[in-house]
Image (cartoon, rainbow, N blue to C red):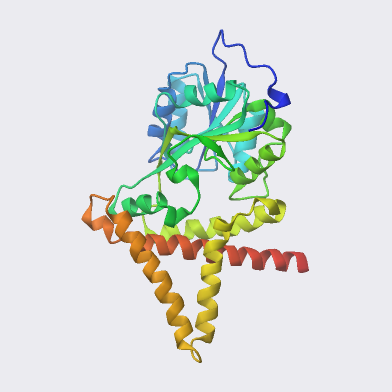
Amino acid sequence: MNARPSHLAESPDTSTEPTVTVVVPARNEEAFIGSCLDSILAQDHGDLEVLVVDGDSTDGTTTIVEAYAERDPRVRLLRNERRLIPISLNLALAEAQGTWLIRVDAHATVPPDYVGRAVAHLETGRWGGVGGRKDGVGRVPAGRAVAAAMASRFGVGGSTYHHGTTPRPVDHVPFGAYPVELARRLGGWDEELAVNQDFEFDCRIRKTGNELLFDPELVIEWHCRQSVGALFQQYQRYGRGKVAVAAKHPGSVRPRHLAAPALVASLALALVAGRRRPAALASVVLAYSGAVAAATVTTARTIDDPEARRWVAPAFVAMHLGWGFGFWTGVARLVAGRWR
């Protein structure tokens, strides 16, 4: 592991609690923003600044946040009419009064020791960013299957934050905690990226020589997609976004990022060759179907709801095909843009 980075050469004064800025990007989150803010305001760490950045909501999100701000001076509402999350994050970064900045998703909740534990890691001066487990929460049978699939290595590959159980340095953390000074020195989040801007930000942190810590005791309960169709669309966006990040940081690509695109390419080639060589198509489909069946059996055992179990296999397929289709769409857009 690397030595203490130069920008953190001196640890903060621990005689008083440092101010922590918690940033919550939100858009049309009236169903969840209340429980999210309740969990943040209940933190053991007392000196908080909570910046909710609304991305032009059309529901009651801002009304709810304004009511919280009237009751608790720690809460402030900022507005982002351009809607993109990296713009929301940068607006909050510019306004932040804290020593540390922690992002919390609007449809997530965190335990009372979340902020204090993250800050304790950052105060050591050893880490450029800290994050924890992102545990999916399902409210309907399909949602519970989606949550289980996202906690499976077969579903998400080597994404440690979905299934890791031991602390370790990682390439990326979800909803990370960072030193404000470092985030500002890096210029904040890339506003060209509608998705995967958090991964790209972590890439730049690691390029400065700072490491990222995954701590499984930092648990984020995150309301995942509640239908297979919505999951497919989400992973399409992830796949497209990965291409944009790879174009900026080619060295960030890992084999697990290419597994789903390889699957989609194999299926496409097998379909083309299927009329003349039907055995080729059958072999690809059977191999993948067998892998899905085996993973489904294992994953379904973790679900108590019998109705949810039947959605596990479709959830796996939606994740893999969504990511793969999205990736190749992103490649096509990148090539077309550079050709123009």
